[in-house]
Length: 72
Image (cartoon, rainbow, N blue to C red; front, side, top):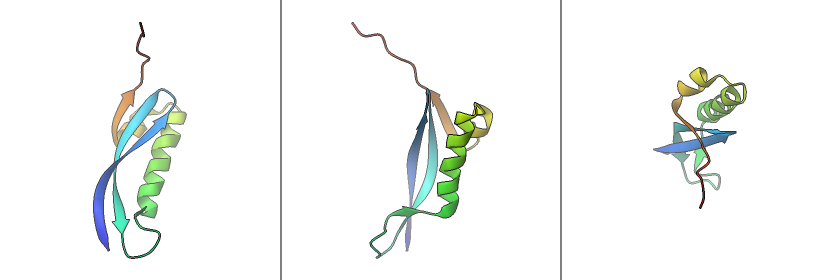
């Protein structure tokens, strides 16, 4: 089994969290996949953002606020 680091982006409302996870690769048809811990981490970030708890969401990685750009 190989492990490969990857950045996953969690988009919720006006925010995006950049979270580092490990993808697990093996010879099964399910590869690549996340560990239970990393899947829970992504869920925790999404829940924290939904609840407005940006401090907790920021513990898992970078947090960005999305703003509309004026179009001409």
